[in-house]
Length: 192
View (spheres, rainbow, N blue to C red):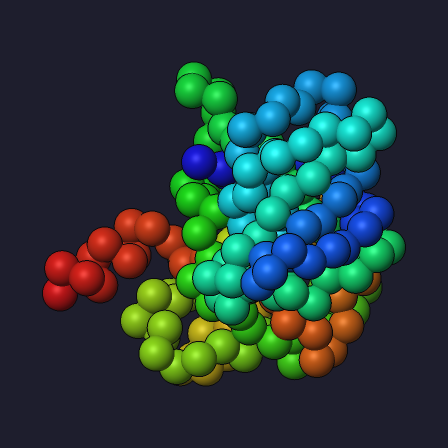
């Protein structure tokens, strides 16, 4: 479980393949605190640490993960939003994020609001019942509040702190992002 509060932006050091899997080597400041078998959210995707190499660590994304997320697009030098799993008893500052990405969306507009930014994303209409105004969504692992959604688009407002401390500062129009819809909304939609 995660909260969607990005802990740090890591840097992809290397990308390799093994059959249909991709192996990512990343660098970040909390590597000394990591251990093999630990879950870490990478742009909202829960991946298991498989190896620690001193100043970097490795994770593997399998075919299913690559098909449902934007991780297949990562290249050396790319910035990745990172969050270690939540500790039981910690405050839940964002919302409940599983690290199980539902789909990808595409950034269609970025508007500088002179002190904040308004990002617009398109998504597949099959998920429209999971998106509500003022509801929670995880975009690239960042817990955000939905603004003015319709059947295929939604907007989020990004404050300066989030902009500077996530990979939103590098996001461009046309780029894909990982979307995880609110788990409570998914259970309600399933029940109905």
